[in-house]
Image (tube, rainbow over all chains, first blue to last red; front, top):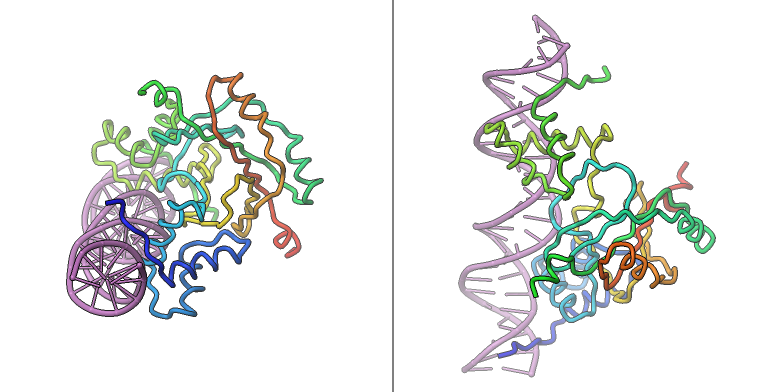
Length: 130
Length: 130
DNA sequence: GTTCATGCAAATCGTTTGCACAATG
DNA sequence: CATTGTGCAAACGATTTGCATGAAC
């Protein structure tokens, strides 16, 4: 009843391609890569397999939040808390630590103009609901 | 030739609604709110006006990255650098500062299980291209 | 009156899903 | 053979866009 996972050449290749890149590709990019070996591959298969690989923990989906655009009338930089249960986003009033961008510069040479910290957890409302 | 921006009741109301909430609403949510006053409002108008307000700096669009899902075969937590020019995403090897979640807890009471820092700037490749 | 903003509907685009067939075990 | 994975195409859902009409100036 657990539902088995069978081997699939397509899935193996998808994971391999993903392991061999340092970029953070989209499904389409992976599709184009893998299609060189399996020209009949379909995008749907890529999405399905990525979903399985994420579920199995071999792959991370970069969590850029929900599918929806979200807006706010608060323009100054600030951090966010994202509830993993209800998907809500809350502003945080933590002070901005400007030394972080300096640390980034000295460690990597990259010049960032700003940064945002995203904390992930369970918000108060959701932790009350058992 | 600059193209003028005229006053519009709909846009005023959209900004007002956005200013009065502490949440980070979607376009649809705003649409439903504003429609109580202007029942003929269309979603397209909401999107158009949000775009204008963002361009004018009155509103921020929460930058959750591109429309596309992005994947990576790197499962351990790490930070990211996002290029504002070419949209590329790079992994960073900065150490994870676990004291941040403790600071969050003592400042707000919120318990985060993890966090991610996103630095925004111009990547090396793009800063070379003039 | 000229130009910009609106409402409506159709188009777009990334992602998901139903289905018949092929591959796995 | 029983079940899972695939390709294909259609469906889906958020966002964008073309167009005729209405509002701003």
